[in-house]
Length: 164
Length: 410
Image (tube, rainbow over all chains, first blue to last red):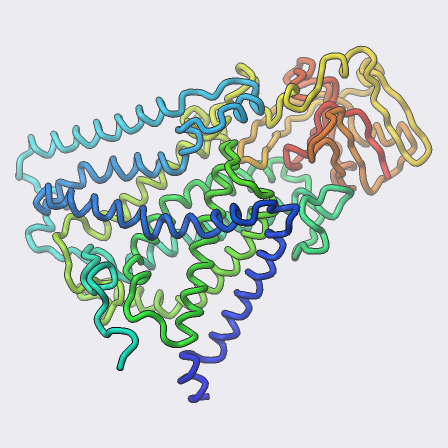
């Protein structure tokens, strides 16, 4: 048993678990890749691994770099959240509804529903504008109040535990 | 001589490259549990939808029956009538909600992707492979599901087959991941209130950058992002005032067909012409060697029933409507079919996977199951299935066949 652990790096249950998972995946993939279902295997491969690769190696590093630059611009101040919050919420909405906001294949929409698609881009821009406006308004109120009652975000700077 | 240097090259594998002071196993655990709760519902409702299509009947199966791990061969119920509207609404709405949850979760664990040294033992290498299956299938399921629900088909494979078998990989990978991570989650819970957190927390940076947000702030932001996605989608199935703010879900605000309720396919795309549904239209009702042909006025001469039933699409939207027409059991009686086990319905539409469907005993015998001639007191519009369509409680929308030509009891 110790010898197995030394060679493999974990207990036999770990190996059994991996074997089951890989078995299920191999079975499922073998059907997905059958010629009638996936006439272009490369296309299916790209879809299967593309999301994870593009996210981990391009998207996440890119937004992390933007965040680092922006934090520097704000000199490490929590005020950056007045920008961060609307950007992230608006960005998540854009990602989730990208096909309709970017109006991809509008003919599908029209053929299925019987009407031209509504202006999803306009709706997204409006919501984005409202998010930024709300953030700006909250920032303005905080400025007017001065430092009389510091907001919880600002209190971090005073040395309270930040967590994490 | 070492093949792998002890120190990684400068870059994301260096300890301290990732500097967010809020990263840590506690935060990952909280986000992970929220994601897990969502995945559990999305996964369960997905498999339920598969069951709702009743692949064991007639030619309903969309994927090879001999390769279907149909673990719950259940006969799909008809009550409550909003069952499918609810399960599929939850499936699609929470599928959208998975976008921010997945992004935040992956952000919280990104240092692990680059952790140094690379795996040296088979167990570690298999662990990396399991993670690839987990993250790869998560993105695959979310991306294919969301694009399909938004009527965008940028791929060259069979969506139903890929999304169904992808679900098996994803579900297996999630279960395995949770089993592996339970001890870590337990430890993280114990250390929640300690300022120092977990000792040797692999997710805690040794080189924290400026603190601009608290852990609670991150969770609040995640709540805001999931709330925004949820509120702009959920009204497509929940209805009521929420429908007015479902601004991003296709058909969310009832889009389509100028003010009436939405359709999945117009008559034009189904290649239904006004001639096909004119005065010459006859409904064939068949049982064994008995066939009865009925004109629309014959059908209107039968006992008319009115029922409030939702039409609920696999793409997530649903709409409650008032239907008027002939009970399916009355049609069965017309050809002497008593307590039929199945009813096979064929549409006038010349092609498409849903030009025909088979429903089971529970559907046929339910008193609310109609061959509808009217909706909201008016003759069915052509796009909604004129001259006659099926409407059965809790049945997926596409099985409520429009432009019905033949019904056969067996």
